[in-house]
Image 1 (tube, rainbow, N blue to C red):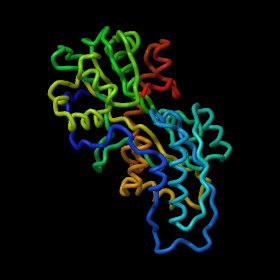
Image 2: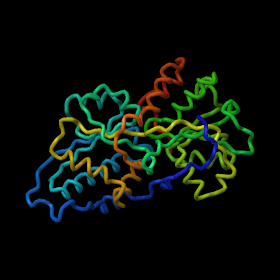
Image 3: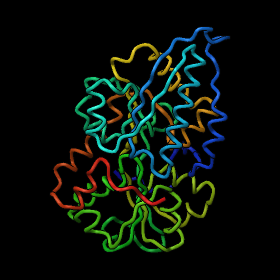
Image 4: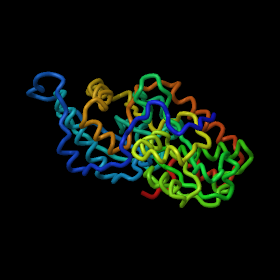
Amino acid sequence: MKDTSLLHRGSSGHALAVTLAVMGLIGLLGWPARSDEPAKDPRKVRLRVLYSGTLFSGVNQNDALAALRVWIETLGRSRGFSLEAETDSFDRLEQADQRIQEDAADLVVFDTVQYLRTTQGGKLDPEFTAGGQHEPGKAPDDYVIVARRDCNLAALGDLRGKSVRLYKTGADWGHLWMDVMLENQGLGSVSEFFGSTSEFSKPSSVILPVFFGKCDAAVVRRWALNTMAEMNPQLATQLQIITNSPGLLEGVVCVHKNFKVFRNDLVQGLAELHTDPKGQQLMMLFKIEKLERFKPERLAAARELLARLAKARPSPARAEAKAVAGGKPKS
């Protein structure tokens, strides 16, 4: 799959970095009531939220969970519930599976690799996926590898021994995709093929060093490249895409089958998150483009990539790249 045009149709135009102060966000997190007045005697509900730590790249985890808790409790009040939200994160999939098995997690947010590998899928209803395009019917966003046009690096093989920066968030798709691409062409793994590699959670830290000639190549999400090119048109003229991945989703949002009382209101609130400016601010904090209603076919590319990765020859580098909870990237 190869698409060497720098700009992708329907660029999302999202901001590349979260500039909100979390306390300011919490102060703004009002939510319009669905009815004229909330119930005078709100029903009490406890909602236990479990969120993957891999999705906190470049974000203060405690502040992000606090902001999420405030939004959920505000949403509950607007729906006539006295909602107590308990938020927690997990670093290893085994931790999440145990909580789910014990019916101790009501709302679970996985990165996509974790969701595809969980042993507790039968206890969960997947409701949303994260990381898709805003336009209805469009495929999930893809990853691209870019280099300067004047460096005569037109094919993946030309990058042997070169330096590369990888954008890492969530499932670390950029690294996993590169491993599969290199293996398919008989070029080894990421650490074996490139001269040096580094991972960053900010797209600008990946793209700009290539633009200024301080790094040879960058692996990054296309929407991030598009957004930066809109702000600086020289990026579009001086950088070229060497190849691109299939569309890959970053996360899956699930609700435990046993969570009933506040379920419909919660799902509706999540579905409407992107339509309200305050909800958009929360999504920016968590680096989510949009929540889309879950469709199994949207995970087909992710399933195929992981299957191809599993068939690749073993190596220490690939084992590290396949780990669900890998090392944290630089900011």
